[in-house]
Length: 449
Image (cartoon, rainbow, N blue to C red; front, side, top):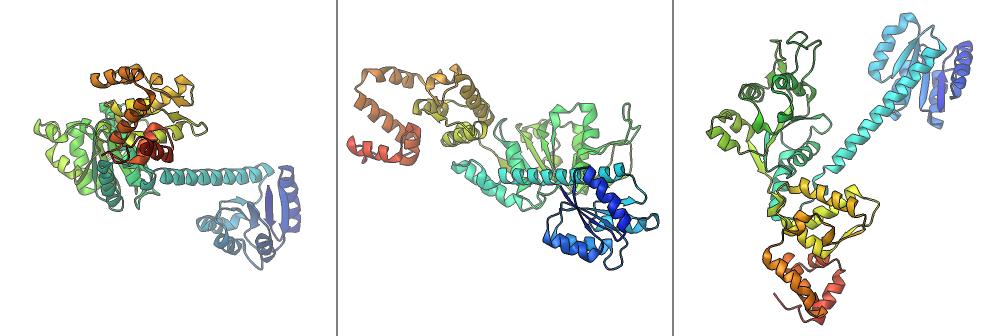
């Protein structure tokens, strides 16, 4: 790795250059700040080590000029004991660290490598954030039904606001995915998204998990701890399965929403909460309110803008697209296709576990079959045995028909399933659209409604 060493002390630069070369660095030396700046403009240096006191251009001035061009290069300052205050201020201006004379070879190398690791972690973190933002863009979500298009339109409007959101829907419908999409398309996307699964946290620890605690607040509280609301400062907190929240914590959550502040367990000092709240539940909160199990005032605070995700059985036209999505997600390097018969079975099944169950079935079927084309027989028995009796009878009768009649029946069924959409029908039949058009014309089916 290349390093630029800038110092007007010739003897010191000779020693430091030798130590850096021993550690594997390719060292370029500059004896003035201006010379260092010129070399930086001409070459790429991942690491710059500069003295803070130089006659023509100080280390801090060099830092400021370099940071105008490159925010990622590691910049280490060398300072005498009396200039430590200057070095600390320089860190606020963008220096990664500083070394106080005299320092050992080990201190020099350790300081550089520590700064490089921090830069690498920051870069990886930024990359992960970008990947998450791309993954949860509304344009990348699988939406092919009128009901889900309406949900997405509401979600897109909500994303740019700061309103509290309540997401309703059965387990497995994708409430957590929608919550992430709202966050990563919001002005808070650069700040944390903190998820709290309310039922998974022991009741006696839930308040501490949400609001934090101070040392000695209860048995086992051996140190201060920040809660989820504090960790989500500036970002979003996602309260999953909010319907399972205990009544005493419902009151404390209501205070956070109303007053935008909370207190750690064992402390009376209020902490401001700059947090957007997204809650979700698979339970009927209105019914819980009527039964006295959920606070009515909290319900109306949460349900400022409720969104209901429809179950998969009410949007079966999305199943082929979801299947394609899961195949690409789980097996990106394999060319896997689903036969029309298998797809028909998948669309006929009611999916009590919704999208999550569909994803699990697709992964399980592909792994266990080891095939690139999945047939009806490859699907789990509970899906194969789900066809209505009339369809079972039809399928048993099909082999007794001439091949042409079988094709006609399959084409008619595919068009019916696709509601007349020829592209979708061709997809269900696993044939190119032009082949379907040819067969429609060949069998005189193009004018059938």
